[in-house]
Image (cartoon, rainbow, N blue to C red; front, side):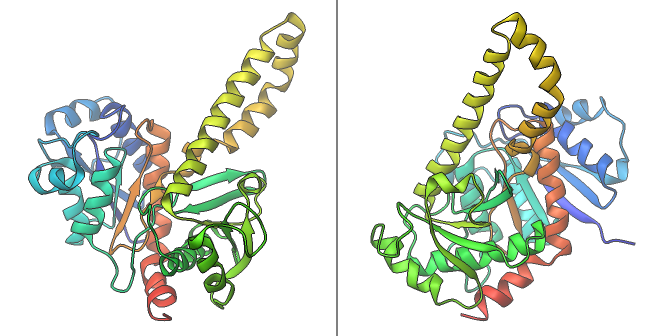
Amino acid sequence: MAEMVNVAVDAMGGDNAPVEVVKGAVDAVNADKRVKVFLAGRESVIKEELQKYTYNAEQVEIVPAEEVIETGEPPVMAIRKKKDSSIVKSMYLVKDGTCDAFVSAGSTGAVLVGGQVIVGRIKGVERPPLAPIIPNIKGVSLLLDCGANVDAKPSQLLQFAKMGSVYMESVIGVSNPRVGLVNIGVEEEKGNALTKETYPLLHNCPEINFIGNVEARDIVYGEADVLVCEAFVGNVVLKMLEGVSGALVEKIKGGMMSTTRSRIGALLVKPALKKTLKGFSTEEYGGAPLLGLNGLVVKTHGSSRANEIKNSILQCIAFKEQKINQKIKEKVVLEN
C-alpha cells in the first residue's frame, strides 16, 4: 500500500477562500486516495464549507487557526506576530514532519518568508527559487526564479539550474531536460553582468544539459525545459505570458461572436479550441514550488479556483514519491 502524502492547506488564503480552497481540497482527496489534507483556518467556516461535499473523512482534518495574514501586511512582521494564522500553523506542520507539503493561495511574501524562516532551507542551498510550470506549444517548461530572489548571484542561478533539472526529470518526467538562461540574445557575450557571469558556470557544469541563452520570444516555443533567471526577469516573463494568454482568449471569443457566420464556425471549432486553450491554462499545472526547502511549499495564484488548488495538492504526491529533496541534496549540495 502506498504511503499517505500529508498536505497542509491554507484554507483562508486567496481571493476565493475559503469556498474554492475547500472545494479544491475535497476534489483532491476524491481524486486520489494517497493524499490527506490538513485544512488550516477558522474551524467553523471550514466545517460549514465541508458540509457541502461528500468525501472520505479520514482524508481530511481541520487545523484550527483563527488569524489570517492579509496580502498587504509586511511579511516578516506578520509571520512573527500572527502565530495562530493559517499560514504559520501550516508551516509548522511541515517543519515538525506532520505534513510533507504546504499549499497556499495567500500572501506570497508571507509564504516565501515562512518557508525560509520556519520550514528552513536544505543545508547548502543558497537561495530557494519559486518555480512555476508554464505551458508552451511543445508541453511545459519550468521557470525559476519567478518571485523569491530579485538580486540573485551567478552561483545561485547555477543551483536553480540544478534544482530545476531534478524537478523536471523526476516530477514532470522530462529526460535530460534542456536548461536555458533567459537573456536578451542568444550570443554568449549578450546580457548584463549577472547573465555574463552565469553563462560559463552553466556551460561548464556537467550535471545539467545547458543549451545556452534563450530569448523571451522563444520561451513559448519550448526551446528549453528549464528556464533560469533571477526573480525580477522571471516575474515579468510570467505575468506577461499570463496577460497575453488572457487577452488572446478574449480576442478570439470576441471575433467568434462578431457575425452570424463566425458564430456558426465557432460551434464547429469549439471542442478543438477548448482542448487547445486548456493546455495553455496555468491552473492545469498546479502552483509554483519553492525548491530547496526541508519540506515542500507550493504557492498558487491569489485568484486560484478549485481546480488549481486540487492540482497543487496532487503535485505534492509526485514530489514526495520521487524523493525530490533527497535528490536535491545529492545533485545540488553534495556535488558542489
